[in-house]
Amino acid sequence: MTPHSFHNGFPSLDNPHSLSSAGYNSVNGLQGSSSSHSPTTGANIVVIGVSGYVGGDTVAHLIRHHPEYHIAVLVRNRFQFDQIRAIFPTVTIIQGHLNSFQLLRTWAKWADVVLQIADSDHVTGSQALMRGLVESQQADGKTRTYIHISSIDKVIDPRVPYGYLGGRVYGDIDDAEFLYNLPPHRPHADIDRTILTTGEESGLRTAIVSLPMIHGIGTGPIRQKGRFATYLNAVIHGDRAFVVGAGQNMWSQVDISDVSMALLTLTAEGLKPHDSCRATWGRSGYYFVEGSEASWDRKAYAISRFLHAEGWLNDTTIYKLLPQEAEVLHPQGGLMFAADAKVRAQRLRALGWTPKGGNWLDSLDYTIWGELYGLTRGFYPDFARLIKS
Image (cartoon, rainbow, N blue to C red; front, top):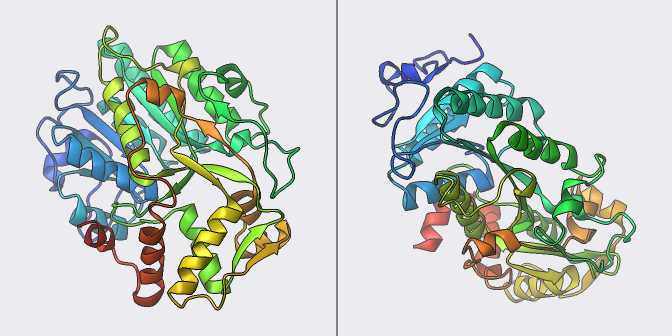
């Protein structure tokens, strides 16, 4: 079996020409490796990461808000293929992975915009996708766009002890040079800079979208929960709400729906011609996403009261853990529950994006009930649609 094919009738999609014969739920206009449609209608969009929390919700939003887009997604196995085909019957499904260099390169040549919402540190996959986009751009002269997901953990100040509040809030306009020149040992800093520099040198529109803690239940076909649910899960299984150290630290947060709308905003900008595009790219293409923030002790208190009232916790006591104890609960527990990272989404707001999904407290009961449902009855794909209906 080759890297790009399945037995039992699951076809190989090494290039876009094989769509019709493969029997996939394809859309019109997929023949050939470059697009010939107008900038804003029938655009070709490739999404990497559809099986994830952010990627799945983003594809759901793309389908809902832009039915004219031709969307292709990457999956690794038959299980993902079946789940995604059932929920998103109109998308084209590609079988492969981030190391499938030629496959990704070929499909990027077909795309107008590529959204890499999977592994933010995967160099090979990013190189393949950008190379394909640049080759198409050089062939027909039409600008292409590459949007890459990252995280705000790169702005964590290592001098601030876990559990304590840091003083600085980073803006993606105010601190643009600082962000671009972060030392390579900071998380994601090296690959972020490489992507933005590639855009500067090639003319490819490149953007880094740096995400905070995300709350809310996603609407994707496979994974509907993120890091905030990880904390809830630890509290429920451990029968106690907790903070690490003093619990004064804060992470900027945002609702999952606002993340998806941020990515849709940049996708739409990436499809515009130069004279009407308001987004900035390359060295100025660093975007934060955020909607609210609160200290971990405040979050722990709200969660403990809710769970105690519902009979899931014996009391509302907030326990203080050491960083190494938090890492027993989760390998990244110290970083996730004890670090301080606060940002401002200045560039997105300048484009008209605003967070509408509510702050973490607004969605607290909704997120907790999603977690409780998963513990008691098994989380299933239609749950997000059930509780949002």
